[in-house]
Image (cartoon, rainbow, N blue to C red; front, side, top):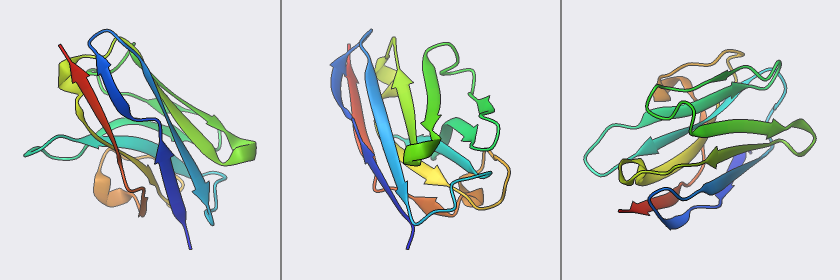
Length: 124
């Protein structure tokens, strides 16, 4: 079955950096969409970044644009999220997600597989 395993979360001070990794197994990695979502307590799950594995096209919301970078290693079926200039409002559980729809979406419901989540805490 498909498994997404995240790593790299932790606690940092504002202005710091973290790098998240997500390794996919049992997944048809090529020409699909993978991404990162985050969810803070009492809030909805929101897209942070997505990448279309076919051509490497990426998307970021304004809240993280210029600070976060999603990348991939096709050979390892792994996506990364480099997070720089972290802010306290970036504090959330971060989830890796993947779909089998050959296109990227902002909606969590359009993703078929999810990792267990990794906590990111940014202190001021």
